[in-house]
View 1 (cartoon, rainbow, N blue to C red):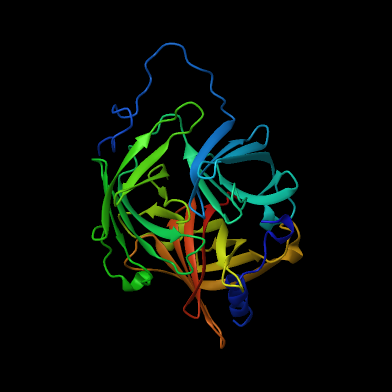
View 2: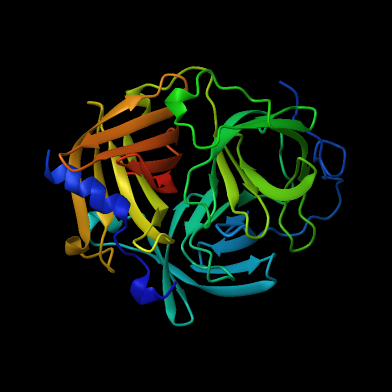
Length: 373
């Protein structure tokens, strides 16, 4: 994505602001078969504590790896699907409050945007080895993968550059190294009834520890297809669906429904938003969820995150829980011209996934991270 055109207003933002202006065991098996305990004693290799590896997927369905060094403010990436790599520098944005929390990535003559949640989640619009990649989502990796927190029930969104609808589904990760999943297609979540976790397919999963410079990750077999992905602390799951097939990105389903006080706070996001040509562009923005069951919203509509004039902002859209999904909330708005709906899945204080509709037409989806104030 060229730096001059990197961020532009999508139909999601234009619709929204038109509305606002009008009104347990130790988990699954590991590669080495011993619950991932590889410490055999002897001499230990010094560890670079400032450099962190992340493994995940770019939106085209490429397996990608980032290594981020916070001390040197440098990064490298490898696209394992296209066998390409690159590197650059990064810096935190400052100045305008809405820009704080975002990072500029500088690579050769191009500038990209990134978000980071500690050493756990890294998001960027860097194409990362293929021009069709509008968004990369990578999760923190360790040399030895601890799979003990992975088992559980997850709700995922199927993100794909070629997919102008929003298929979603459920995924059950079992302690014996097997999995089941169910697709709900384009059914609205509130119309899905009690969620089920079986009925579409089965598979297996296993942790794979790092080998040399290749970071650890999780291998999934889904309906006979071998795929790669990653967990974040039993809270977020990512499955790369293969070249040209996008990714599943999901969050754990809590045992009891979340309440509004639990989701209060600011989450910055990066989106795949449908543009005027019917394709996807990358958009960035933020939600500020308030304790009065409303949300304030900001979306970048110009090229400069640090310029207040390049942001549109709005306030006070109502927020309500979706009763059959314990961590899903719905943001709504209406005007004489259209309606707006955004569904937001939460890992409170850490991570969100959201997908949006305008007048019942799907307009985009994305992921975001908590902004510490």
